[in-house]
Every structure is written in structure tokens, then in C-alpha cells.
Amino acid sequence: MILGIGNELRGDDALGSIIARNLSELLNLHENIIVIDGGMVPENFTGLIRREDPTHVILIDAVDMKKKPGYIRIVEKSEIAEYNLSTHAMPLSFFITYLESSTDAEIVLIGIQPKNMDISQYLSKEVKKSIETVVDILQSVSKIYY
Image (tube, rainbow, N blue to C red; front, top):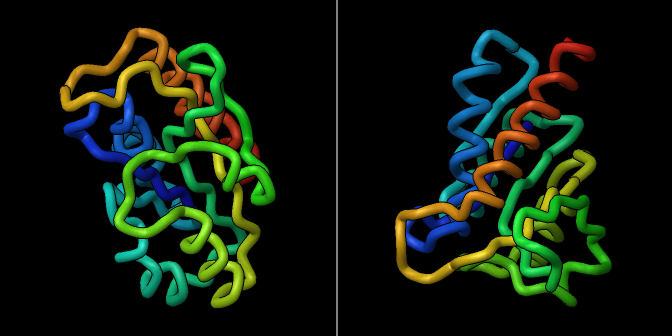
């Protein structure tokens, strides 16, 4: 399961939602992959996640890691408290802890360094490039396994 997280009214914070929508179009033929645009409230999808009982949940979100805009990395659970995550109704660390306690899924957070999270609907060119990279990687991996 892939869950994109983001606020489309806050510039680069929209990246998770955009990736989810792009992947949804590309991976809709794979019955073993579920892609969700969790928007600003990914916790609204916990029931669906529990029902589907995935082996893995890949979360994608804007994470301020104090790196160059567009920087991509897997953020370890122990590091989440160190970074500023995008705007959410519930802290992402609580969401991950809940998923770990209510599912057997391996939880992975892919963080992308935003450039601009001001109120805007425009993405920086650096984040646009990172969005394309993550979509390409996840699409390629899906072809290998499914």
C-alpha cells in the first residue's frame, strides 16, 4: 500500500498527494498494490489499511530535513521526531505508531525536502523533479514484484 500525504494549498507540501495520484493512474492494473491520496488527514484511512491488511505501507510526505530542496530519503522511525513534517491533523509519529500496533505491515516513510510550504499551489522545480523520480522508482519496483 502506498499512502501519499500532503496539503495542496501549501506549495511543496502537496508532493505526497501528487505522487499518490500519479501512481494511482500508473498502477491501477495491479490488484496487489493499493494507492491512496491521504491528503492532510491520513488517519482517516486507518480502517481501510486494517481491512486490506497490507504487508507494507509506504508513506510519502514532505519532511524538512534541512537538506537541499528535492532531497529524497527513507526516514527512520527514530528520526521522525527530529524533523519537521508537513502539516497534519495528527503527528505522523502517532499515525505510524498506531499502524504498527494495529497491523503487521512494515511501515516505510519516504521523505522529500520541500523548498516552499507557504500558502500557494505552486511546486518548486526541485520538488517536481523529485516527484518524477519517486514515481519512476515505485513504478519500476512494482513491475519487478508484480
